[in-house]
Amino acid sequence: METLLKKYLKGDTTLWIVFIMLCILSAIEMYSASSTLAYKAASHTAPMIRHVEFLAGGIIIVFLIHLVPFKIIRILSYFGLLLSFFLLIYVLFKGKSENEASRWLVIFGIQFQPSELAKLSVIIVAADLISRIKDTASNEWMYFRNTVIMLSVISGLILLENFSTALILFAVVFFMMFIGRISLKYLGALAGILLIVGSLGYFAIKVIPKDSMPAAFDRGYTWVGRIERKFVGDKDATVTKYVINDQNRQEQHGRIAMARGGVFGVFPGNSIERDYLPQAYSDFIYAIIVEEMGLIGGIFVMLLYLILLFRAGKIATKCSTVFPALLVIGLSLMIVIQALVSMVVSSGSGPVTGQPLPLISRGGTSILITSLYFGIILGITRQIKNENVPLDEDVEIPEDGIPVVELDDL
Image 1 (tube, helix red, strand yellow):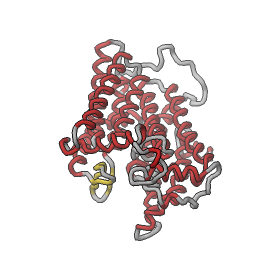
Image 2 (cartoon, helix red, strand yellow):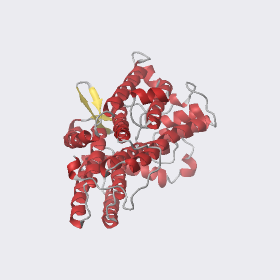
Image 3 (tube, rainbow, N blue to C red):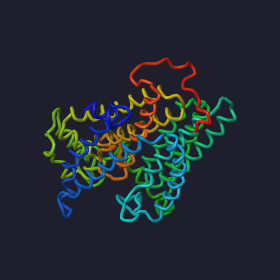
Image 4 (cartoon, rainbow, N blue to C red):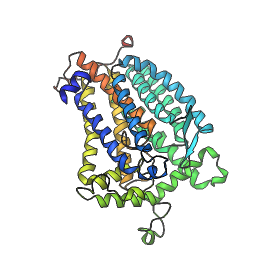
């Protein structure tokens, strides 16, 4: 298999294996977790075939994108950012609503989430802006300011319908700025402002009745309710702890699914909770994985994402300029943090967020965009190998870290 990968698929072999393993796990678990969809569909095989088609499309995307030089992706990201801006505004007024949130657009019969394209574009543009920072204070402030403005506008539009996605995107770019050696005074001020704005928003929702709040902020009351149920609890918590109701149905059935799994699981196809757990095929698919594959299967899935993060760190140290290094780190962090959030929610350890498990959960837009992430990362490793830089050998890193990219590298 390794010979086949090296012959036809360029880039890092380990990352190709991680990607392929995630696709295989996705197909296996969707066959089991989508039973409720199969029951409702005209054809019982339709949901599974649709999911496999998206996975096949993702594989094609990875193969094609990993052959594209990252300098071209760098330029195209600005067009993607502009398109995302208009689509995020459009979806607020004309978006299709599911689960009380307008996150989807339907164009020519194709349903997709503009926020997925926005996340990808923001990470690439942020990597570009941060990589341009020189040693002067005025230069650093200019690119830091531009990055924050861009991030705030896009995250703000996403925030109106998807709090968790906006928060994850903000956190990823914040880490990228930290790794890009932006001054701690700027990052500290940004964190402080974010904390103040978040606190004011929380208290505003607690004080102002929902009927008096503009409709654009309706989702805020949902977020606050979920957070308080998880971390504050009900007054009658001792009575309702084990009662399944409309508010805790997902969390409770998620816990039951993971408890049934034990160490070795009940094996694929034998899940019971897939018929009771809402969104078993998307937001809570990790609970079904643990139920069917046990603790061993759950740890194996975790390891796949951790291997991705470890390899991304290794790849970043081999990059000759800042932009590809930051881009690899940013894309891998987005995948891994989203996976971590999805796992935490499935285990009942955090409030419900609606975050899918990357490349495994059902969702065409998410699968295709995550495949783009992998394609870009693999493309960078391909170019590193073309420069005859071995990915698995330690090299001496300069004291001042990764060299700063020059503008004429574009």
